[in-house]
Length: 290
Image 1: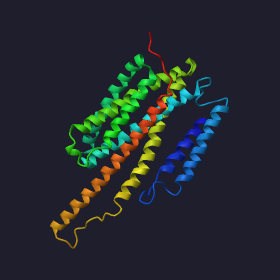
Image 2: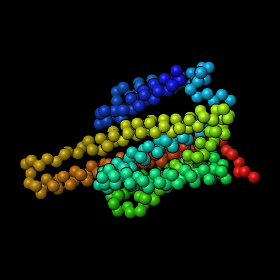
Image 3: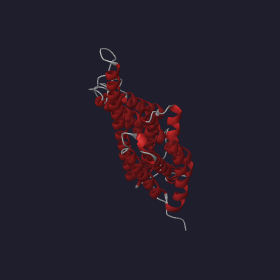
Image 4: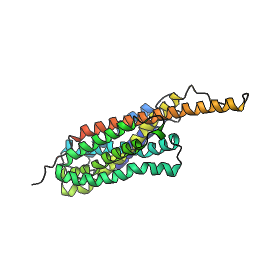
């Protein structure tokens, strides 16, 4: 029953966020009713997990605030992660004229630094404690996304600044992985470690699912609103030179709209990471060992 309620809640939220016609509104006509139904179903899931003798996530006895804070950090980090993995390659393909392989290699800067940050986060958490490393990781990630939100319209002229910003964002999110994993284990008993560690992964995947759905809904509407007044040039009734000039102007305006959409998405992601850094102050802290 717990699994069914959780799946139903997520399904309602995603369907409510999906808008097949983003030109007129961020959400479809059925958006808010389904999102409200998803929230009610999620509350029903929590109620069931508290009262049922058979639970999907049985964490009885674990301190609720530190545990929920740790899962919230994992959720927010997952949202930032998938936004990056989807929209950075899109930005490379649409603004830098890269193909799919080149766009994936452009994203590799973020992914490699994410891996390095995950290892580094484990080493630092052992010495400094999980809370401080989690806070620092989300703060570093926020600074990386804030820099990405300031990318210039012509990305080809940005040079190494693009690499720098992707590396900063990847390192920051990587630093968070080990602290939230170890913190949730310390907040639970030994018999709950399997469920607790799974909950971290589930929270991250839920953040990826809901985050990309919400950001996509807003991003598609934003792009439609930015290009609503553009008229697609046609090669009829004008000479070839005039048509090419109109086509170049149209393409430049579309790319400017895409640039605005992407940079605003990265700014929203920076805000998500700032929120994650604030929540991370509630993560269980392990003092430095003697």
